[in-house]
Length: 237
Image (cartoon, rainbow, N blue to C red):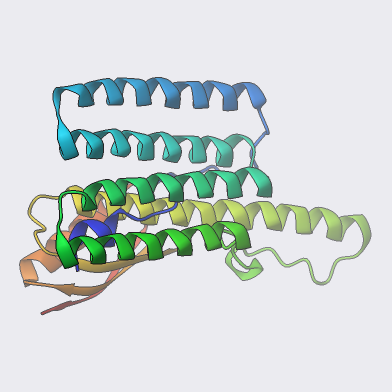
C-alpha cells in the first residue's frame, strides 16, 4: 500500500490545549484565521518555483496546513459542535485533495487503487465529522455527573461535554500530526502504519520492512507535541 496515502489522510492538526474551556473569543478566532490565511498565501507563493504535479502537491499541502490551523482556532475559541464539525469536514476535504494530487503522477492500476483509497478515507472522515465522533465518552474526562441533580447536573454535563470535545479533538490532531511527520521522514521508505491516539497515547500498528524503521517510526511519533506515550505493535514484513 502506498505510504503517502496511508499517512496523508487525517482530520486535524496536532495541538495541545489548556484545561479550561475555550472563551469563545471572536476577536482571537478572527486573528487566528487571518494568520492561517496569511500563512497559506506565503506557502502557496513558495510553490510557484515548482511545476506540474510537484506544484499541485505543494499547493494542496499548503491548503491542508490552513485547514488544520483553522480547525485549531475553532477548537480554542469556539468549541461548539457546529464549528468543530465544519472544521473537521474542511480538514478531511483538504487531505482528500492532497491525496488526489499525489495520485496524479501514477498510472493504470496503481492510480486507480490510489484514488480508491483516497476516496474511502475521505468518506470515512466525512462520516466521522457528521456523526460527531470527535466527542469522547464521559469516562475519558474523569467527570461523573450521574449523582447530581438540577442546575448542578446541568452545569456538570456542560463541563463534561466541553472536556470530551477538547480531549478527543486534541487526540485527532495528534494523530494527524504523527501521520504527517511519518510521511515527511525520508528514512521511512515503505510504511504501512495505522495510527490511533487516546488521551495523548499514540498507538502504532501495521508493517514495516525493518527494525530500524520500527524504531524510527516510534521515535518520530514520540517527538510530536502533545504525545504522552507511544505504544508500538509494528511488525516486520
